[in-house]
Image (cartoon, rainbow, N blue to C red; front, side, top):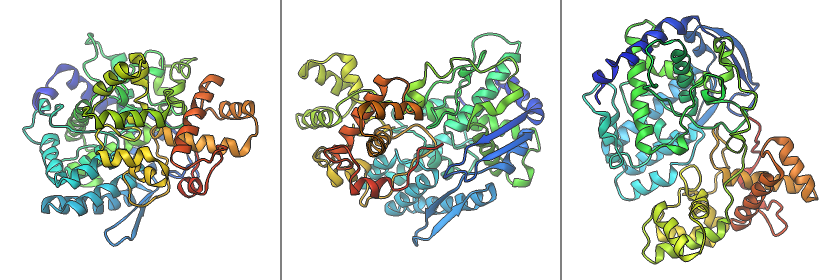
Length: 485
């Protein structure tokens, strides 16, 4: 489907009209807890979508090619910062300068507080394919071309996540939005409110996927009565996420072309990014919609079905044993994908298919992204210790762990939780109670599952000692990292 065909659909036309009519009149209650990204927190009541931009906050920094730190927090500062990153990336990609393209991409991830795409980017750069791949994606994801959504398929989109959406958006010049969990959550809530009022009927045509926050924030409209549940990033394919970014960009451009919103930002692409930044602020916690929710009150038990997705409970598995099994599987000629490894486990380890699938928890793109690793990397990871950790992180030097805004890196966060709780408490019962009180798990069983993985991963990489206490490497890696959101 191409842009004009998409925008001419009656429901899409009606949604754009609804946004143009309703967004200026809505009131939002921005309530941000103090964090490294929003020091001091934020307590603001804002009337009108366009006014949200003045309260944009994202404290972040990155290193330019001279290793000089570039910091930002407000929207004006962020615009300047991202402008520098955009020029660095664009110049390197156009020249085909793989080392510089890689470094620009890594610094974009640093700014965004995400790291899941690092192994993928290193693999492409090592093969000399990074610039070409990014250039190809520019053509497939532009908002003002003749591109077709169907071209974004499993063959063309090799990976997509919270880091790559930032890279693709910055390299694009047509205003393609960064589509992360917060942006998806806010747009999904707008669409949910629209569907409550729309008289067109039928099943919802659109969907706006999102992902869990690392704190107690709500980023799924389905947590409210009458709210449309959003598909979760962990359950959709890479190409589906990429298409969502393009569709959202088409909607934003269509809306801004009929209004004068964010006119002070300049060009249409700049206005698109201002719109995206406002969505980003609203998507921190959907309870900010307040009075706009009306009948969409928060479900009394909204935290029960998703307790494990909003806390830090992993799918139970024995990490060090499973990665050793995977190395054996690969050395025997196994294909680097989940289905093949699951089949191998069922046949060779006498486990059920569901257990074999659960064993792959740490292999996902939200964790260590292990399926496509080389045998050399896998061997280092299986051997463990600091070198194994560096291989798992695709890093040459150990940089302090960054805890971002989304629920990712659960394995490493569980090591952090486990190490700290063993420092504070001397009995198993006290440790469980501490984890439950902090909201990291919902039951004693899940708290113990969390600690079991934390102990296993922590000891494997030398982050925890034989008594499950933090080692010097733990303190170096996690530093002053806090789980407060």
